[in-house]
Amino acid sequence: MSSSDTELIGTGLRKRTEKALNDPFLRAAVAYTTDKLRSGRLAAMEEFGDWEQWRSRAREIRAHTIAHLDYYLGQFADNVEKAGGIVHFCSTGAEAVDVFLKIARSKGAKLVAKGKSMVSEEMHLNHHLEQEGIRAIETDLGEYILQLARETPSHLIIPAIHKNKRQIADLFEEESGQPMPPETKALAGYARQKLREIFLEADIGLTGCNFGIAETGAITLVSNEGNGRMVTTLPKTHVVVMGMERLVPTYDDVEVMLNMLARSATGQKLTTYTSFITGPKRRGDLDGAEELHVIILDNGRSAQLGDPVFQEVLHCIRCAACLNVCPVYRHVGGYTYGSVYSGPIGAVLTPLLQQDMKEAGQLAYASSLCGACYEACPVKIPLHDMLVQLRARKVKLGLTPWTERAAFKIYATGFGNVKLYSWGAKLAHYAMKPMARGGQIRKAPGIFGGWTQSRFLPMKPKRSFRERWAELQRELQAEREKQLGGEDR
Image (cartoon, rainbow, N blue to C red):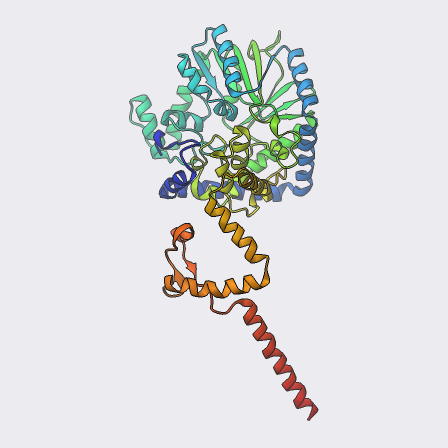
């Protein structure tokens, strides 16, 4: 997929889906990688033991934190400032961008080294920095590859899930002007050399935050590449951008969450690097940024607080386990969702954060409602129930087509009346008969056409199950009466 193919909300869910379904390489790459991640998670769960107890404990921690978020945000901000950091609360993405640009201007910054940060993607920060003439270089390998391709992440933890080594080598060749073999060692070597220069030259290091610890004001970062340590220690200024919900109360709580995050995301016991950063560099410290800013972003999150249906979406720890088991995501990948957040969590989170039920709300239909996402979620978020509730919201707002509303009214009337149901079931056989060939309908008319785009619709049998069951009961009764008559003689 090229940059022009990375289309956002507003370009039509159907169009994006059709494009993904017609890309066999993307579908195979996404299925292969998600299979590996899913198998790794299952093996890690088995080895860990008592998974459901850990899962319940993780849910309790997230539920308690979100229920008392105002208290823990205050405690966290106080402790960041006591440790020498500066906290900025921002209501919107635009406000957060303004804060970051003010910091960058005050430092005369020309180069920003970025660690992995989904919130900075949510803010479209790179675009705004580019307009200011500030270079922002992604240092997470997957993000770096996508930056060269001018694409956005298509998976929460493996952003370049849809790229193979040949495609990456082509990008590196274009960047370096040198031949590049499609071999992992050579590609990683080039990226390491290139990014090392960025770490040393950057004026500002920017990272996300996996968990903020309220009792100390510490920032927790996990990674498998080590770029997080480079970004947070080599530039003189470190800026953290985080969603307001990314808190846990204590170090004991973060221990639970780190165990669940690594196992659910990649099947690891722990990620290769886990960093705890409390304030800027202090006297006697060998390394660290001289100045630390923490930007805490709301951007639609607080609107979910107190909502009996959707508050739990703020429990998410961004492990992406729900993506790896979702039958829809595994077929179409991340770009179909048209948003920073993809998969089942993206289908719920995006319309809520953007407060857009018309366009973003279409993502509620990008699900089979099978519940696999709930089973995989380490904090038990009932995403499949939330998707049903989002669909209900669209109906209440009158945002569904009139044909769909009429069809469901007919459906409800028919299934709520036994006589109508029986009559309709008989009529369906004769209505379908002119379109059927060999017991199947290969091209259904009108609004039913979507069903037959990728599968056949089986012909409705002439006799219903209820009729056949009644007939079977009569036959059994007659057989029993015949046997009893023989015994009497």
